[in-house]
Length: 395
Ligand SMILES: Cc1ncc(COP(=O)(O)O)c(C=O)c1O
Image 1 (cartoon, helix red, strand yellow):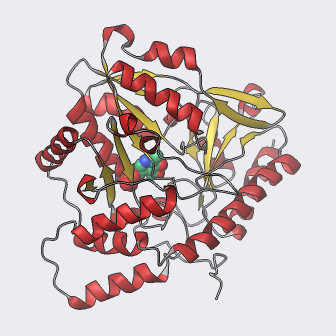
Image 2 (spheres, helix red, strand yellow; image 1 turned 90 degrees about the vertical axis):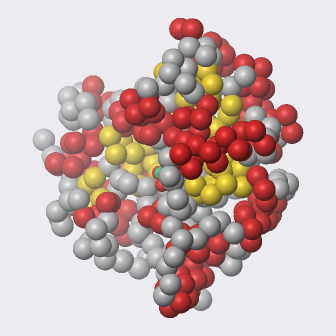
């Protein structure tokens, strides 16, 4: 039976960050989780664990780590070993732990902006120096895509004398929805190897591919690159279990891996037993028919978003996301004309009663943008787009 992604599920009253921080007249289209039920094999596995009714300490089993190995092989023909897999309490804690392990005071870390907020926040949270390679926006009509600025990328390493110990890659890239191609990834990776900078690759959105787009794990490109990589993967976005917090670091280099494990231990980052259960079911392959239908639904929603903007809001500039369920909209024209203030999300919250993410939170290049989450029933997406359009028509 096809999955009914059109079903409206009441999430208010569940302490949902997305839904319960705002009053009931507000439509939330911000935090990156989806308004869909998870695939049945996950629910069944969790029910079984709950019925067992003993919740003592658990560990990441060899079987679970092998599930990650099998998934990388199946999806990317990437051969990894079960011993390379380290469970983490999600990916943000994974790359925060990697930052603590790789950098000492005065060291730099390189990111490509605009990018997922916590990438930017490492500087304030941990004190390491943020070095940026802003991606270059290419606007064609009301469509936007981003390309690498190689001169700046190369120049950003060791900027201002701060050794770049970590290149934190986001692939696919949130919020712009870009899947980096093999050539770009290879070029980035070779530079990192040359500069002695470890690549920490956040690939949390790697399975949420829209249309015919493909994902390439940067570590899978060559053995020399693999050795210089910490790859972070997780079922959390793909299978909508973000609130359970479980991810995996894949680290082939033994020294790096030992050091990463030690850092996790020091930070006492322990994964919950129920999260392991959900992750195992999610990555087992049993949920892949659901995922196939989800990707088709999200691709349809992406097309609705882009077409709606073309037809109804042609002065808004939009990406055509290749992955994720996140749209990235530029309101530069409306800000320039004084129709809305410098923070579009504030305008839409007040005037449209829709919550979007403020683009500026994604760092350099995010100003005058807003991020919209289309991982929801199409009827809610249409409702949100209608509210946005009407708010811009008001004087
Ligand atoms: C690129 C990226 N990394 C990490 C996360 C969050 O990861 P976690 O919830 O596993 O810490 C998100 C959530 O939106 C994300 O977009």
